[in-house]
Image (tube, rainbow, N blue to C red):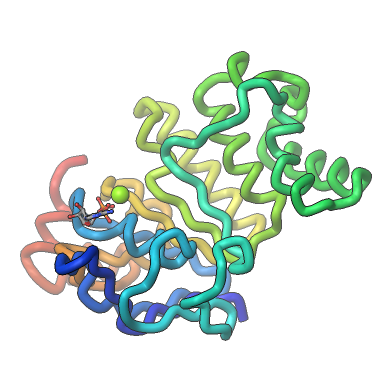
Length: 238
Ligand code: ADP
Ligand code: MG
């Protein structure tokens, strides 16, 4: 089962502890959104799952395997960032194929995969274009395509839409939801935008100051906030 379990996860930078013991289980195919104010430890938590930050204490399990000491490339996770960097000199197809080439995937298999993923993301007409000739939304789709072609067990998103304008953000939100319904990959999505959290999440994890305040479905949190922080955070205007 391709779930993710964080068991007492702690992160300290030297003497400064910023994540104070996170317990969370994300079920296979679930879409969980980590939400909370800037600096509360969302990215740090996600980066520990990805293997981009060392885990100070606690255990991380993916797919039933303890991952604390496993290299990022061997974790079967793909991460989509806010500042996605596409290779400017490569076209869309080549950008998406990059990670597969490194893994020495056979050429015909790369072609089939790229064609399938481009279709899902509506990128088929743009496969020959360079990033400079794409809109912001199309570029973000290429960045997602690059993650999807690797068929990861887990998707990690760190505020992937925060560089887009409001209209595009709403549109891409719907696309991410559709994509998740179609691919069913276990996903952890970080945002500080409560509307994004409410619309995307199977369950929302509200974080504050390196701790979890509450976990629940959007309706549970909205109808039954555990404390004034949760109520204030989810109730405040975007
Ligand atoms: P969020 O993503 O919720 O905005 P972060 O996970 O980026 O928050 O940061 C959590 C806390 O950890 C912040 O106080 C931040 O300043 C601190 N922090 C993040 N990275 C480092 C680092 N490399 N060294 C020291 N402190 C850091
Ligand atoms: Mg962050």
